[in-house]
Length: 479
Image 1 (cartoon, rainbow, N blue to C red):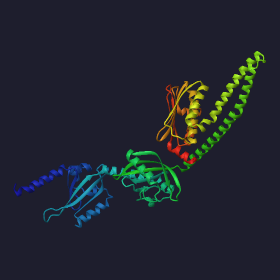
Image 2 (cartoon, helix red, strand yellow):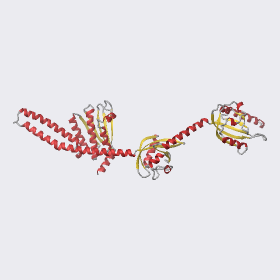
Image 3 (cartoon, rainbow, N blue to C red):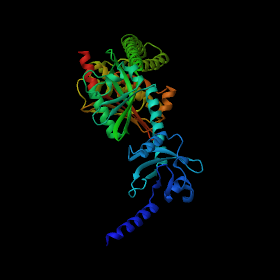
Image 4 (cartoon, rainbow, N blue to C red):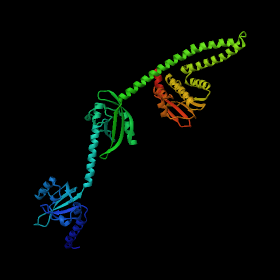
């Protein structure tokens, strides 16, 4: 290829690229008049090529583009030979659009005035997205700052606090500049490091968590309780954790007061049960026994008329039955077996007495039970058994029940099962007729829980469980 053919080919290549380019291209003189415009620029601005050529660039540029005019003046004066910026353009139909403009001097042959070479990229859609993101960020920022909940934003990588809102400052007493840049593992920070580490692990593993109870220390040293939630989000390509915390200290204190009150009421109830149980056994039961003996003596006295002996025999049987019922009620109110023989013997004895009294069959089994159990745990489970059996006998419609009492390494379990009609637990709670609330309240006092499985015509299983730690704590407190 000869050197003389290169300029012709270069010119041909330039025109080809000029026509086919997706970017808008214009060649202008130093006054800003358009000399050449490619199809992409004509399409972008809504003009034909013959209309655009000869126009001043100021005719389709946003009149507010002062920066562009100042830079163009510097280009004309030879102070700079190129510049770039984002600016607004006005289409022929009046629609405004955004363009990314790159301008440079195009040197021509010696002695001829230089030309201006301009590349314009339509970035209208990108600007719309950026504006939407900016508005979204502004809304998020406003919501973050003004939220009635305490909000924190931390890095998921190194756990640094990136931001906290005003509610956080009011709630904890820690100011934003005292927290930002620090981590929960710094000495004196507001939240327990171990608890925070577990919170972070859960958020990273699950993406989001709800209902996390957090214990924290306000700046004045007050210990408080919050209910938090966390979500893994991404900000500027960095994984972050957004935490929301509501202060529930007063609620927890109220719950503790209610639990304490409930405990005192149950304690008073037990004392009254013990008193009544002993009086039934030691007084009324003994007096009924004396009456029964005297009636028996009359029944066996040959000097008494036959019809009187027959009547006294009937009365003797009725009084004996009443005495047996009083004795059973006395044992139910206050079980001496529970006090002296332990929970297994007490439950077995109660199941036997209850079965005989109610004419039902109770299969009681126990295994792996730790010994000894504290009085609080024993009494709690014994009362749950009584309530559960009474409910089952009254509502299940069957005459056979299974009772299981056993221990594991972590918990003590009690189940009462029947194959009867079943019931709706929520409806039962609202009716307050099945004693579920009573069982739950008793179990709460020993950190236990109650679960119920019940389906219509497929029976009911009541399952009480108490953590071994609660049993140990109770024993330690008693000792």
